[in-house]
Length: 200
Image (cartoon, rainbow, N blue to C red; front, side, top):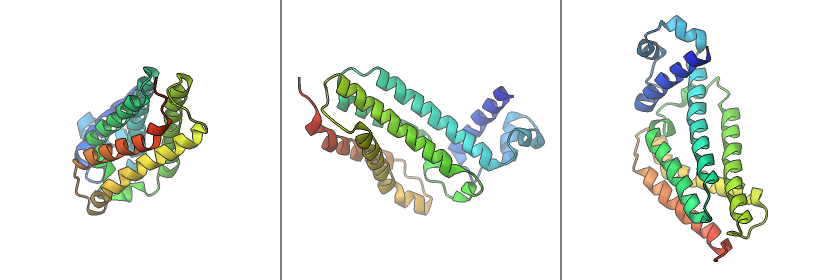
């Protein structure tokens, strides 16, 4: 059963990434899979539950790649932060239509708030693990790593929203905003951490 769900998520992800959540129907996903709609509903009783699993799959993949980058930490915090931001930007470009959905009705009846809170906790833990590596490597002098990780994560997300709010309101994607977000986030990272780096 798990293998079939993975196939459904993979097919749904392609559709959602191209057409968005609202414009994709369960019939289209079933047709792509060459199964009946009833068979699809056996695994996913409604579209919101499928959307949630698709989002979880994307975020889990991103978090895995972020953790891999942190494992390879080589003693240059700013370079590692840049790599993490560039990785997020690549995901954002790939799935930009998720980011500025033209219709947020799919959120109704779905426990998206709980999932988003869990994603955010994981984002903070990933940033904290990078800061811990930098401190342990004597590259960074910093206390209250959890506070820094949380605040920095919140700043990054705030900059993300700042540069995409017009897209969210209009529903018209402007993928070039991702580059503005990345540039703004890198500036913020330098402003926050440059004075805390230990020069060897």
